[in-house]
Every structure is written in C-alpha cells, then in structure tokens.
Amino acid sequence: MENSYIINGGQPLHGQVKLSGAKNVALKVIIASLMIEGGAILQNIPRINDVFELLNLIKVLGGQAEFKEEENTVAVDGGNINKNEVDLLYASKIRVSFMFFAPLLKKFGSCRIPNPGGCRIGARPIDRIVDGIKALGVSVRYKHDTGYYQAEMTGKPRGKFVFGKPSHTGTELLILMSVFGEGMIRLENCAREPEIKDMIDFLNAAGAKIRQNASTIEITGVDKLRCLQPFTITADRNEAVTYASLAIATKGEAVVSSIPERMIRSFIIKLQAANGGYEKINETTFRFFYKGELKATNIETEPHPGFMTDWQPNWAVLMTQATGVSLITERVFENRFAYVEELRKLGAEIEFVKPPVTNPAEYFFFNFDPAKKYNQAVRIKGPVKLHGGALNITDLRAGATLAIGALVAEGESVVNGASILERGYENFVEKVRSIGGEIERI
Ligand code: EPU
Image 1 (cartoon, rainbow, N blue to C red):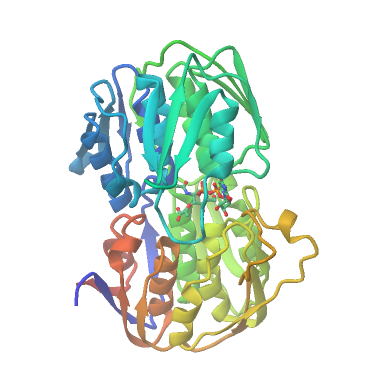
Image 2: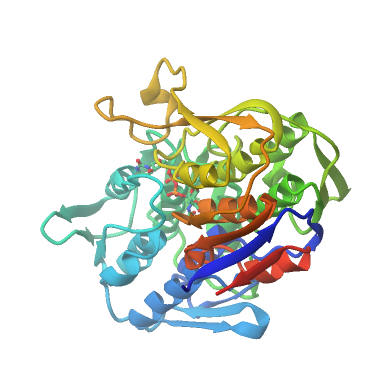
C-alpha cells in the first residue's frame, strides 16, 4: 500500500498555518514568464506536483525552469525553447498546458497542443477559449484523429472577444495572447478571479499595458516585456479555506496569514452565517475557530466574487457537523461531487437532490446539455458523528475534503491517492501535524 495517508481523527486541531504560494497564480505566471525577454525569477512558488509537471514540460520544450528547493524560487526563461509542440504526456497531466498557445504562437507563429488534462471534475472543454483565440485572428483546427489542436498565426493578434460565459484560465490565456497584440484588444464578460489580477500585475510590472475594469479587460500591445525584479506569488486562498474548514470542523482553531480578506470574503460571509468563529487579527491575518454549535447553511457556487467552486467540497464536511439540513448547489463544474460516496463511508448523511432551476442553460456555467443527466446539488443532514473508513481521492479539492473528513472522524482512516492532493497542497502532512493532526504518508 503506497500513496496513502493514514489518519487518526477525532481531535480538535489548533495552531498557526503558514500558507504557501497560490497554485493557480504560480502556474500561470510561470507560463507568462516564457514571454519575457531574459526570463523571470519567481518567489514563493509552492512545491507541488503540478508545478513540477509544468517545469518538466518547459524543459522538454528546450526552455529553462529551475526550482530552488530551499527558497521556493523558480527561474524561468523561454529564450531557448526550440519545439512548438506540447508533449501529450504532460498535457494529460496538467490542464494549463493549453496556455502554451500564447508563448509558442508568439515565438513560432504556429504550434500543436493536445486536448488538456487536469482534474476530472467535468468534461472541461476549451471551446470558448478556442473561439477567443480565433477571434484574435489565429487559425485553430482540432484534429480528431490525433487529439491535437493545430494553430497558425500570421501577423499580430488583434480584435475583440466577448466570452459567452466566463472562463478563468480562458481569460488568462487571451490576456497572454494579447500583450503583444496590434493596437488595443478588448475582452468582455471575462472571469474576475483574483488570480487573474495577480497575473495582470506581474505582466504590467514587466511593461505590459493591461487595464482591468470588472469583467472588461483592455490590452494595448507592446513590443517586449522585461522583468526587472523578482515577482512574489500571493498566498493560496484555497489553502486558507481548507485549513479554516479543517480547524472548525474538528472544533479547533487555525490562524492563517498573508491572505487579503477580499480573496476569501464569500467564504467568511457563509461561515459567519453558519456560526463559525472568525476574527480579523490584522489586514491579512485571520483566526478561524469553533465557537459553538454550527448551523446548517446553504451555498451555491459561482465564479468570483461568488462562493468558489473549489471550496464547496470542504464546506460539505463542515455541514456534516452543523445542526440541520443544508443544501450545496454546484453551478460551475458538472462533476464536482465525486467525494460524496467517500464521505458516506465515514457515516455522513448526504444525498443528491435536484435543484429547482428554471433556466439551467443560463444558471450553470458549464455547457448545459438538456439530454444529459446531472447531479448538481446535495442535501446534508447534521450533525453526524463520523467514523473512520477507507477512502479514495478522485480529484484535488476532494482530496483535501476527504482528509478533513478523516481528521474529524473518530478512529483510523486510510485515504488513498495522496499524490492527487499533493498536486495542489504543499507540505500537507507537515502542516496538518503542526496543528496537532495525526497523519502519516505511506
Ligand atoms: N468551460 C467550457 N468551455 C470553455 C471553458 C470553460 O465549457 O472553453 C466550462 C468549464 O468546463 C467549467 C466552467 O466553464 O464548467 C468554468 O471553467 P473555467 O474555465 O472558469 O475554469 P478553469 O479555468 O478550467 C480554474 C481553476 C480551477 C477553478 C476554476 C474556477 C486553474 C488551473 N484552475 O479552472 O481550479 O476551480 O478556475 O475558479 O486555474 C483547482 O485548483 O482545483 C481547480 C479546479
């Protein structure tokens, strides 16, 4: 038995958790660095599997990507990239591989990129994104026989694109495509996740001209980018929410720092409604604590500034400990409840329900197909005393959720698939132990 956590749960966890750099900023800024003359030095890069996969992909293309372990620093330089095709092996492992359209088209004017992989939390097509790339004047064809996209660009990207529905990584890719564009490129109905602003800040510091105004982004093309100073990746808001949920679900407390409140506001609002303890220590440091009986509280996931989809699996464990019946509705991805079966093994009372939605094609952010059956909502009854069990991690955020469930549960649990969780959480075992959790990696 390998690639598992052995967890002995049932104890309140207490302490301070040092948050790592945000995965979903680090990955994009590493790719953006490939478009910077002379490369970039990036600080506070999390030591997680997704980062290592990405760095390997860059090296396979001929670029430089060195991770300095002791400093969590990465030096990236795309100057020597000599291949315009992304390897299927890496594309199958990391979803952001399709963002290579931007640096490869800039350098070679053409590229071949496979359909991306990543967490299996939905079909995750890239149709909107491909439409956006085409709107900027690039020819993109999908070859069904090979599974590759073939793209060609003559001249500079130009034009305008309006997203039918927002896409987080799609917005980031179109920004990257546009930084060297002709004149001003306008993107509308863009996603507004704070990670996008971080990437914009990085590019603007290197000389890009990007203006973000709510869901509209205007990019005026420049000839080159230069990064004069190291760039520091902000703390991971998903990690903050995971440790906050863990602390409160075990009836303990956790202090997290370096996280601006605006990044986790929608979580804090729901937490307060659920009678979860929350104290602001300073602008970026917060104490989350159990202050008494939790109240069942409904959530619906939405793009930013709504309640984030990545947090709903964690919320589900919290609700198993809350009094009453809560409803969780997932609007962003169509397969984000794979953890439900697993939590049931710990004794959780969760059942799928049909949300009363009148216009699903508008309400859901994935491409809704009326001919398909979807499981988009669950009802959770609490509080329930969870017990140990043998669990299987299916996707990254479900991984943290099952670990939280096992740490709440009385007795021993085995959680299989640790490497999936480690795609996105740095030093998970050490951090959980530092607040008193009994967890071992085998
Ligand atoms: N979608 C389409 N077509 C497209 C693009 C998106 O149908 O062309 C659908 C998606 O399948 C999904 C919805 O639109 O149902 C929203 O997808 P979006 O593109 O916004 O999400 P993403 O960029 O694939 C990123 C994060 C996710 C995070 C979401 C929401 C990265 C690498 N991934 O995904 O993070 O949940 O935004 O904020 O940034 C994670 O870290 O575990 C994770 C899944």
